[in-house]
Length: 377
Image (cartoon, rainbow, N blue to C red; front, side, top):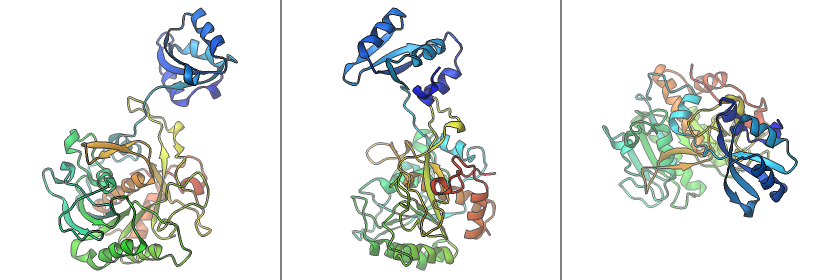
C-alpha cells in the first residue's frame, strides 16, 4: 500500500474497518480510461464519474484500497467525509468537556463587530452586561457583520438552540460587547484604542477580567499603539487573548496586538476530524492560514486551538461555520474563564504559565504553534 497516495482521513476510516467492509472515496486518475478499465475489470462499483477532474467516486474495502494505491494510473485517493470541528468536539480536544466548570464567575469583553440577540446568550438568563458602540453610537446591541456573534458563541454561547451541542467553552460567563469593527469587519486603530480605553476605565466597575480580541492589524514596530493598549490592559490585571492572524504559511506574519510578548497569542490547527466526530491526535496539523512567528525576535504564537470548520452562533440562521485564528482565540479566552472559576486569585502571568505548561506539541516548532494546544488538567 502506498500511503502517500491516500488521504490520511481515509486511512483512519479504513484502518477501523473489517476486511470486507467497504467505504466510499474519490480516486483521481493519471490515466482516466486505463483506470476506468481496471475498476470495471475488478468489479469495483463506480458510483459516479467526474470527467472534468478525471476522478471516480467508488466504494472499496481495505484490500482493494491497497491494490489501487499501487497503480501508476492512480494519482491520489481521497476521503469524501465533510470534516467539521463542532464545539462539543473542540471542547473534548482541549479537555474541557467533562469539567464541572462553566466560567460563571468571569466577565469577558469582546472587541469585535457587536452581538446579536441570539438565544444562546439570552436564554435562561441574559448574560449581556453591557454593549458599547464605537462605530455608530447606537445604544441597543446589534451585529451587522456576524463575526462578533460567532466569536462570542465559541467562547460563551450556552448552546440553547442546539440542545447544548454547540455550547461554548465557558457557557455561563458574562458578556461585555464592544463594537469597534464595522459591518465589513474593519476598524481603524483609533476605534480599537477607544474600545481598549473603555475596558481600562470600566474593568473594575463591570468586573472585566478577560478581553478577547479576534482581530489583527499590521504591527507598526515596538511602539505599535494597539500592542501598547493590550499590554496596558494586561498590566492592570486583565487577561488579554488575541488572534495570531490568518496570513500563514509565511513566517513573521503575526498581527498586532498578537506580536506582544506579554499577552496570550493564539494560532490555529486542524484536527482533521471525521464525519462521526472522531479524531486522532496523530493527524492534527497546523492550519495553513495560521500566522507564523517570530515576532520581534520572539517565538509566536504562544499556543494553538482548533480553528477549522468551527460551528457557532449565526445571524441569518441559528448556527454557521467559520475557520480562522479568530475562532481559535475565543476558545482560549473561555479556558481562561474556567481557570479563573477554579482560582479567582490567579494573575494574568500565572494563567498564561498554567496554559503553556499544559500544552501538547504537534510540530515542536514554536514559530508554528508556540507550546502547542492546551489541555485542562
